[in-house]
Length: 494
Image (cartoon, rainbow, N blue to C red; front, side, top):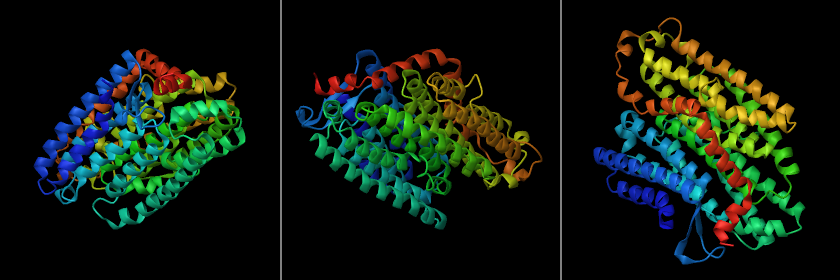
């Protein structure tokens, strides 16, 4: 049964290699990609259910026992993230079928897409710090190809910053890995966590912790390393922007959560309640201020990625089961809603030919289904009950007040209000008011574009109305990762 753990990595690898051979056959690529992503989604659902019912699955690659060999670990958190990443990947892929031009398809769009999923799923499942670096690089190399896909001047210019910041972060990652290996003598995360609990080197470990936090913060777009994101995510087509917006920053956030629960839990007063909480507050505030200042549909959504990852890190910083459960809930909410919003931006651009809000208007009258679906996801992002945004933010903010973190909790409430303001700005400019697009544009068919987005809109409603069982599951995930002995004993078989 443990061999199933490697399938979310192996399947995209095999499919990506096969698709390379059909680069000029668009229909064949679509058929293979569509069938494969559905199989991958079914597998991710099965793994998540199995891990919940039977406990953590550990695969020792090559039958080399941990900590000497490579291990893949499918616990509640990793299987949950694999499920969410595959869901986002499936929705964006089916949207791409209807929106990506044949000129882009023939330049290895689909192979790059599946190679990206290799890196993402591998980062979630690996139990080895060095292989976390390897899977990050696989993900990033594929993302470099996708972010410049199409080769427009704007994409090439803005993606340069994306590449530079990630190359710099990867260099720091190697330094941090070497440093922690010199201290602990191992790369296995469970073994590192065990050694850290035994070592009396809090000062050196805190330095390594901050170094790794900088690495993951740059990839997760936390303050002050978020400057590359808004313009980089503005250039690519909607399907790619939605995939990046819903998925990539969460890999960095996952890495922070994993390492700061399993490994760097020796001094939470300094790392979690001090540095991480402070960074979370600045990330939320500066991100939402950037969104409020914009008058472009996609730029507003891009800045909101920054502000919203702040909530996830806030939950980790408060470092209680309630706050962590809220952070897990919020990750699911954000990946679903943010993906949907970027896809809605793509649909509106298809109709109006622009993402400039000042040049848009009247979509509510001409496309009411699009308008009200957007409205649901917009107010969910802002945290309006009874949708998923409210029930994921509430436990984080409640935990903040319970722990005496009044400043960060107040910032979180303020950011929620400003998020609502900026999303209503999109609605009032793009969907309300006088129609600015032509009758010819009104007749552009968008029904097939909305079909992949409908499940995401349904999910944000379900996550709200079914908040109790979803939060119970999130609490189970939080309690498992808050006790590092669960992870350590499963991997090392103590």
